[in-house]
Length: 221
Length: 232
Image 1 (cartoon, each protein chain N blue to C red):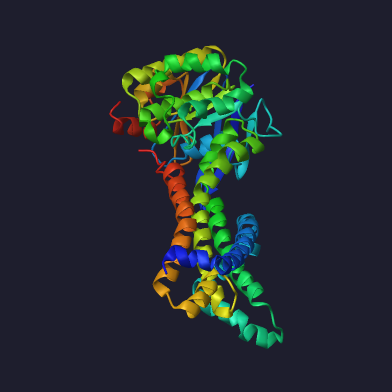
Image 2 (cartoon, rainbow over the protein chains, first blue to last red):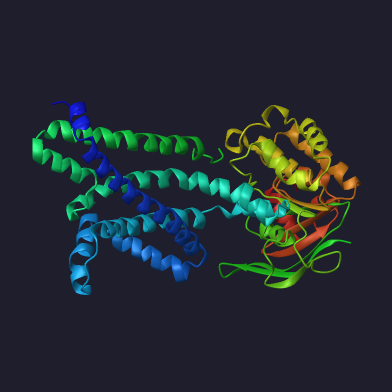
């Protein structure tokens, strides 16, 4: 039984797993990009009230392995709180928190590090605030943040595999179940790898292309 | 009807940079500001450009502090130029000009011809040489038709021929009533261009007068500065 035979035979199981993975990604990506961008903007506008706490959260989370964080929220946190939460929700919340903090870091950094001299030039040449934002700040900031944001979203897609370890029926767990039935690990995990390559490579390629195109060295010689 | 600093004090990082500077930029005149590095010339330029308010004293336009910063009636070209890196040099010049100057396209062609810019206007700033960037930054300011233009070392990367062209352009603008403040270390340029020369030292105006002070300094400090520059 080859890779394609397995994919054809178990396409429904793979499809169900893929759907759960995509649902996880949708939650993580939307929450991360919307809330993370908002947190990053707030962090640059209010460095003490929002920026420092956000950086502290990022610093602490960077020191905790994702799996430990996920398991801690799935078992001890729920036991301490006396609640039982659906593993999908736990996984989505865990990874969304990581994505929000990661996106906030990228956005806040780009805003805080934005070279003020470009705004000075806009002011003395009489550009309005709106023109300065639309024609100077936004294009330069987007060029700086889009590539790392795309790469972060690819990483978040890969991290959804951890959800299988708390019984979320996403694509990796679907593959494990199929493998348990027919024991064809080479073909099954090759198929899984091809799936992730098919999704990840275009996004990674786009990020690298954007980075090469827009975040080239603009320093003056 | 002048751009004027009166008793301006300014500290940066706890260090007094300007210690009571008085200077008047007259319309229709080129005022050259000279002095050793670190004496406060650029800090004064930023105050006169209404970018950094003074700690004490006042910067006035037409006799009073303006209610709003009068950009680009008062505009500036900085030593670091501050060209927007994602735009071509042409776009750098035209972006502010479109809003301000109905004849921007025609003026652009005139400036491009005068400053020999046609062949590099579609480069990005990081693809252009220092001299090309300086000319573009100057064009970005001049196309706005400001009443006062404050220029910080704008000829430092230019050859003699280009410097002479810019001097010619500034002379034309002076005749049309524009007030020019020119920070420069090129004393020969100052001697040819200036209606008035202001020498700053240690955050104060140490001597001011016509370009003749470059030949006959009244203060020992200016004499020493000129001697160091090999002009006395």
